[in-house]
Length: 277
Ligand code: PDD
Image 1 (cartoon, rainbow, N blue to C red):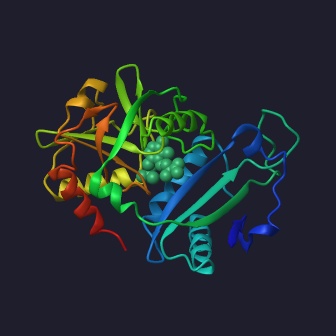
Image 2 (tube, rainbow, N blue to C red):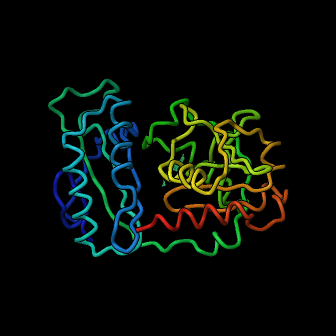
C-alpha cells in the first residue's frame, strides 16, 4: 500500500517515524478522516479546512498549502486504487528530544496518512444500533481534532464491552456527543443537537446533516439535550464520516421511539445519500 509521508506518496514500508516524535510522546498533533465513495473524496475541502483550523488552535504550522495537501490526498487515493473506504491523515509537531515546550521552528512537522477499504454499514442504517451513556471525561477543547484520544478510547471500549455501537457522552446531565460521532434527537418534528462549541467536534457530517434537515423541512435547534431528553426523543441519530446517518434504537435498554429507525431519520438518510459522489 502507498502512504503519505510529508509531501510525498511512498511505499508504506519506507516510512520512518522517530520514537521521539511528539505524536507518540505527547499526542501533540491533529488528524482527519475523509470518506471515499466510488473513488471520490467526500467533502474533502471541509475536512482540510478543519485540519488547518485544528492546527492553528494548537499553534502547529502546517508547512504545505491546502491545495498541495488536497492534491497529495487525491494522489494517495488514486495510487491505492481506492474505491470505497477512507483516508486517514495526521500531523505532529515533529521529532526532538522530549521536552514539553514547543520545539523551535526549524523542527519540521511530520505528516503521515494512509487509506483503508471499508464498506458502508448499511445494516446499521436499516436496523439501527444500541448506545450507552458514558460520562464525558475528555478535556475542554473537544473542538480540536486532537491525536489525544484516551477519553474517546475508554468510552468506546466501555460501549463495546456492553455490546453497544457508541457511547453517548454526558457532562453531568448534559449530553455532548459520542466517542467518535455527533448525536441528535428528534422530538415532535424538531431536531436537537449540541451547539458547535468547545464541548464537541463540529462534525463535517453534522454540517451536511444540518443542510439536509433544512432541505427536508426539519427545523433544527442547536441546544444540548439532557440524558432524560435523549430517552424520551422520538428518534435518536449518531453521525460521522463512517456512521453517516445511523439511527439509535436503544440506549441502556431504553427503547427509543418504536425501536426502529424513524421517519425523519429515513428522510435524512435519503437526503444525505443524494449528496454522495
Ligand atoms: N471521528 N465527534 C468526535 C469526537 C469525533 O471523533 C468525530 C469523528 C465526530 C464526527 O465528525 P465527522 O462527521 O467529521 O466524521 C464527532 C472520526 C471519524 C474518527 O475519530 O475516526
